[in-house]
Amino acid sequence: ENKMESLLINSEFKQITDSTKTEINDLRDELKVIKEQGYVFNRGEFEEGVWSVACPIFGKNNEVIAAINVAAPQHTLNEKLMEEKVIK
Image (cartoon, rainbow, N blue to C red; front, side):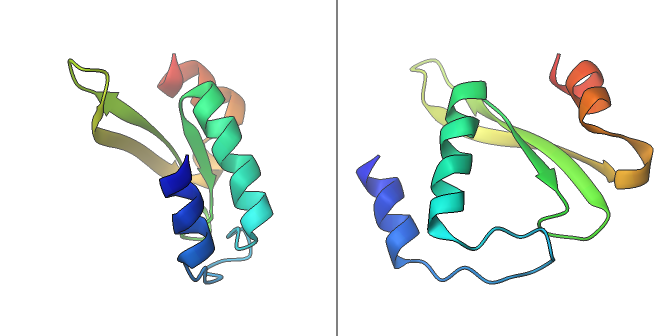
């Protein structure tokens, strides 16, 4: 928690697309949701028209050892489809 807060406070956030979150409070809120649900949706935050879902991969000591991300053009999917086909 303290490490994440330190990163938030000491980082510069650049607007990459219209969907990019750059406000610290918005990022804190998003991080809470990600922690609760265990995955994150990217709705064009890094590239317009590209959506993705990412989640951590845990090692035997329940530590994050990697992450996986699945991306697709926005016009080919929506949140419901991502939840049904990718997450479950």
